[in-house]
Image (tube, rainbow, N blue to C red; front, side, top):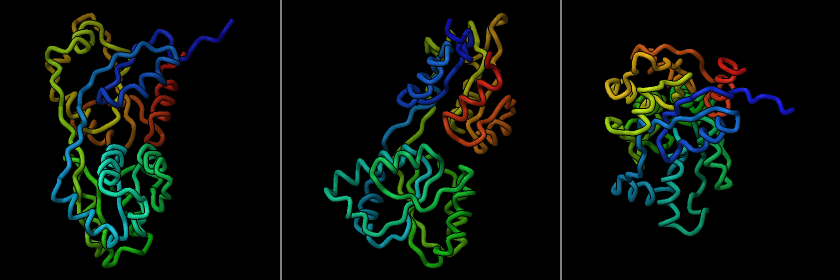
Length: 262
């Protein structure tokens, strides 16, 4: 007889954008969970074309290129390969990244990451870059989305780096008012709801009316992928039942199993 799966009989709500939910959903399904996808946010390519032209023209003049998300890596390289047909056009750029998912996306291009902090936050990345001792008068380009916080840029500039920002994607809140998954969530609830970004937490809070549970629905506990997401959860008053030991989907699932697993 096969051993029971650790999440058998558990109902888990996933709040990632639709285009990114499948990886996490598949992991949970293989562990026996019933997965309900609540796409609280939508991520789309949105490139500052003038900024892109300026950065690509001066690409060889930068010392560091900094990525804070896998989306940034993906969309930047789509544009890079549209313009250049040789990876050597990156010149002697050094790569810095926040988090394993971002690092893995960079590694797909067979590029070495020279700076990745153990803690996957913008603050930790800034500190790690400063510790390299390479920032005084260095030119740095930070690849961002529309919701990126400015703490990273401010800390780098304070360390005397010359920082440019290039926006390549946009994160928007989805409207779940008439969404079938949201209706299912309202009626039945879930054992847990997983948050993998601050923007999903904010959207969950903003759409409280569309996600209000019925009297007999199961009230879920909430899990966070890491410190930055947890910080946002605390700000909006959403109790944190568990947090991944390091920010990654695998560790988020591990924390979920530890909390709920049979």
